[in-house]
Image 1 (tube, helix red, strand yellow):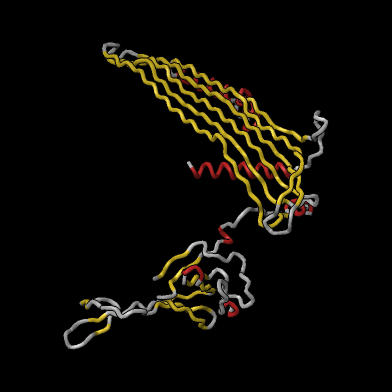
Image 2 (cartoon, one colour):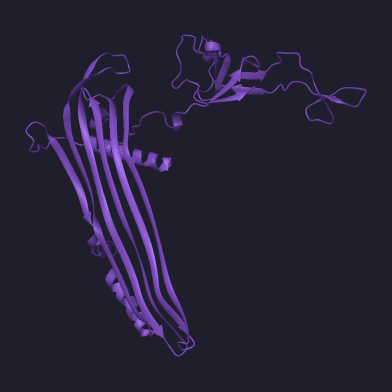
Length: 369
């Protein structure tokens, strides 16, 4: 359920972002606020006609052919189907005044305009199908009514705000949304099947129904960017055939995987074009004597092997040493390649000038002790 909700959030954010990039120039009746509103609606009672227009297959004629084929075989059959309902989506955009913010980049207080996009989605639909059939001969027969259908309702309300300055730089966005979905399906089978010229009759009365409801009463998020986004400047500069990719946070391509090792048990030294990290003994240990154990040395006259410390080596392209707050850890990764300038650490970085490569931070450590 969480994954589905996360996917829904991502889709809604994409829709709102795309909608917010449209020009806002249509004046509404409100004399104080300019609105740009647009939407789309579909009437599901037109489904059969639209299906024929798109595929060239008339659904009503297909059902009539099936019923005629059954009649030719001596089977009485009536097929019924009905789809009704509406789906609509309305987007309304406007500016809702200004406010003062303090960007995370430390550039000082900024006055920004609230650019609002409101998304309203309504869907309600009913689909019913039925088959009434009767057949008999001298030995057997049936008289059946089979029906099924589905009903669904989806309501989504989303309120999206972007904070942009006079130059069109975007400093953050807020999203508030609610959602209600209801879905139900049913199946009915009534009638009887007979044999032995009606002497044996099996009545049938089957009913199955299932319903699923899901709602989000109020989901909110407030995001301030670490630096102002130039998304709208980039959109304005697009030409025919150009592509623009925009995201928030770090995707899989930028993910940095860290391996963490306790400096009390690990020593990392520069070796050629990479770091070599290996475990070291720090205490006098009592060694168990194992018989025929792998990776052990022959001990001598009593036909035994004596096993020593692990001595494993690990190789990395970049390492950091953390000794603040009592951590005393090495953090190593291959995600930045191999450069000798990264050998010397200054507190929490291996750059000599005290800076870090993009994305540095122990996001996920794998401990080797």
